[in-house]
Amino acid sequence: MKKIIVLTGMPGSGKSTAAVEFLKLGIPVIGMGDAVRKEMRRKGIEINNKSIRMFSKKMTSKHGKKYVINLVKNELLDIFKTHNIVVLDGARRMSEVEEVEKEGYKPIILGIITDKQLRFKRIVNRKNESDFSSYNEFKWREKLELSYGIADVIASADYYIDNSSSKSVFITSLKKFLSKVRSLK
Image (cartoon, rainbow, N blue to C red):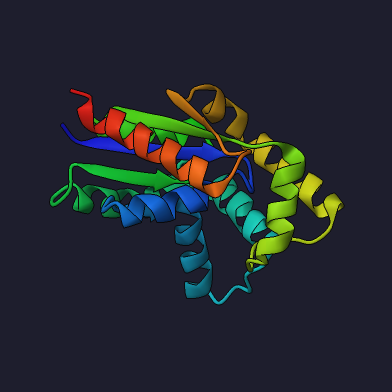
């Protein structure tokens, strides 16, 4: 049976760390945020925290809430030609999960949960092109993510992993989760 692990969580929760670990374990990962940034580069749009959010908002207003999942859907289906499990990193809307279901797959939603202050600290320290450095910007992004409906996706998770401890504890939890997923019929 083909399985889609849908990673969700608030910014800084550890989704990207989880994605890297899944890749190390031989599981292909499709990053929804990567697809948005790729589309922005293709259109010659500068990439920063606010421009990514505004671009996504504009495109979903123009093309519907399935805009981002539609950017990656063909890639997802292609991966299933050679793999039985794929990770979809960064679902923010239930419509994205529902679109996967419409393709005939039962997504397994993994919610990554982390304390808010720890998430802010991680984001400030990682310095990605889409990140920010002030707490006000952090709160702005939190509010925007919540407006997308990410809380509904997190609340719908089939499994949760708390990533408030060490990286090694988190990785161990991810491996246990993957073992469960592999055993599902």
